[in-house]
Image (tube, rainbow, N blue to C red; front, side, top):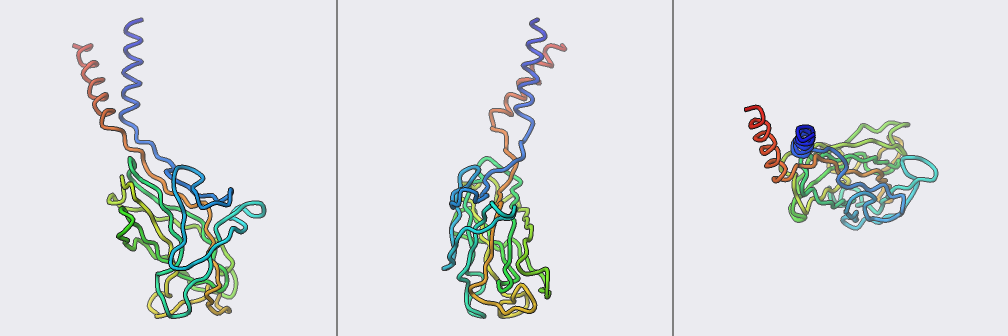
Length: 221
């Protein structure tokens, strides 16, 4: 009985120390029609003068998303207006971002993603763009994801922004539908905004793994 109990204890200790758990750190699904995170602790906010309402979400009728508007006038401001999401990544590594984003016909076809570890200094980490067509590109949902480097792990003041941007290689915005004209009243809608990562085992867990190995070696000796 003693041998069996010790074996089970060793298995439990090893399991605690060796597995980094991947999962959602913070998420906003907007079903409660609030800027607070629906999973974890975090807050969404508006950047640069945009305004927002809650509108039909990625899941269709009966679901909700954050609908943003009041973007910059044509050719005036680049990468200044959009939405921001703050949620700590403390204790996590391998950080990834994912969300659903709906472009109205007259919204900008391009967005730039910025990230921060301190809430003050922002770095552009990705740009999403597409070539507008007469149908299928405006009033359309896009699934976006960004994989971040190690420098964004374990950051208590982590946040990221999605900002409307000029069409690449130009000095102005391009409407998301080729038969439309860009307008500041165009909308970008966000849903299922998710910060994910791997939960890093606490230092004490690593010590337990070492203890488990030591006990196992002594029992074999």
